[in-house]
Image 1 (tube, rainbow, N blue to C red):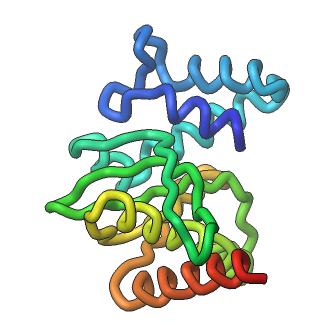
Image 2: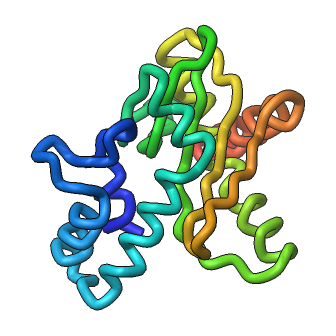
Image 3: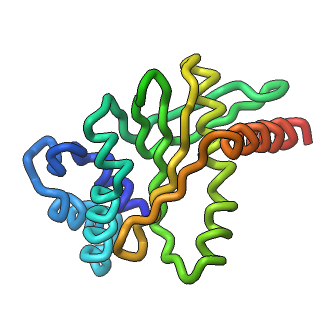
Length: 177
């Protein structure tokens, strides 16, 4: 996972090259080597390619966007909610959170359980972003890249409202326990 995230952080989403002009596959292989997983370099490159082919990531490339954004917000009495957003972009005056997931998915139940696992994570990012920027988060997108073709799960509308509330409750409970 770290090698995939590191490569995607280095790549220009529009050109699919790093600042030195190296293509995505080369950057992915270099990050695999740097992370000590060079035996999985081709898998890392495939996951990076999958992320770049994701409709949401391709759309983000056409918008103002940021990669690996640190977010933090105060929670409860002395607590801090923090994390790193893999990809953040503006869309019609609101923000969109994108989180890359390298899980290998097997069957519908596995996907559903993974979504449940990560739903509060991206909702917590939305809480922190809204608190620190004053901008609304329109949607959060989980981009699963572990199985070849990118699979996206979008959390928006009432589902996002409920997820943000649950993430905030969980964070406050952790601070006060």
